[in-house]
Length: 120
Image (cartoon, rainbow, N blue to C red; front, side):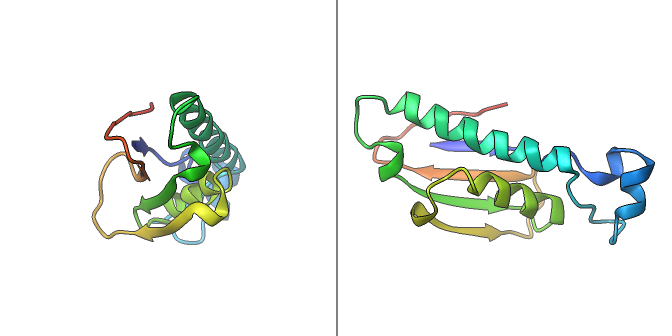
């Protein structure tokens, strides 16, 4: 199963107060709202997996997860907050890639069934 997710709210789009907090102008951090958005996204992805696999095998807790993101700070922060919703022992790892793509975060869920779902 494949989910493609864009990063949460970035500081340079959030107003003057957040703009002053940016340490690297070309690589802004997530705002507090962006962190919340990412965590909610992780919770929602886990819910979708549970619904999809309800009464069948494999169950979400049997899956292994690989998270791939852009190397931008906001993307890495987003994948870290999404990963908090997933069973830690089932995460193969997180990986940054220098390939820039949109949306900025790619989350790959591996299961025995071949299927694809894109969540907006």
